[in-house]
Length: 294
Figure 1: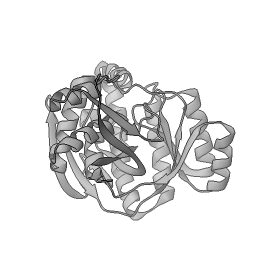
Figure 2: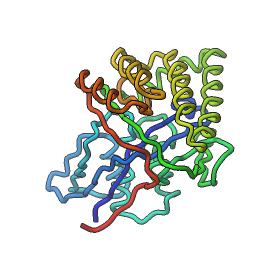
Figure 3: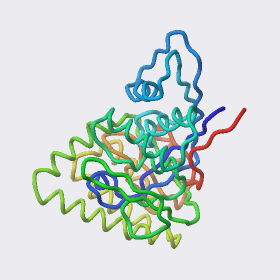
Figure 4: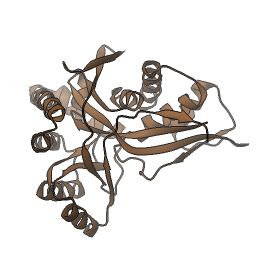
């Protein structure tokens, strides 16, 4: 059996979601194929893969991942692989898969939220800690709870741009945490991001690309205050705003990817090509993780 695990984007609310504020995420039509291959050495080079295999009681296994998306891109690679390994071995419900994968990721990083694993498990648009949509499940950790719901709507065309440098979720979440614990200023930013997310859900549901783009721009501006953007990300965002409805970093930042809602796609792609960055011309998808025989 081969597991097909989707990458995901966060349209609104990254970092704020760690503290219980709402966030809107979605799976995108970029799938990795994940195989468990017998191996005499069983050597694995990433802590989260080692921990997942240990959790499942597996040894002498090599995890083969086929994807065109670089790791550290902010598109949920670790969650996608952890979920894929678990699903290769066990037939969990979507809720249990999301929960178990998050526990493994959290124990490896020591921080974070279950937004990635829940989005990959559920598929489509997933709202965390919001008031809209069809209820999915609830996950709790260290006194913080996250309620997930599905937002039924049409897919959104999207251009995803890898900035060329990896972002460390652990480092960036820890950086933002220092801001958050200092006082009211960071908490006010998180509250504003939460409000942007709530407006963003309504715009996505209406299929209002103009408003979605405007809110993405606002969200990005708030995230910049925490110092998690980079010069390259800012150049990509600038191009995205010129030839698209809006653009923002997605995920933890410090590198990784930018998402753009395209308006003049031909000019957008031409301009991005000049930057020599990796570009994915894709869209959101309603599909979550699945497996099938090949």
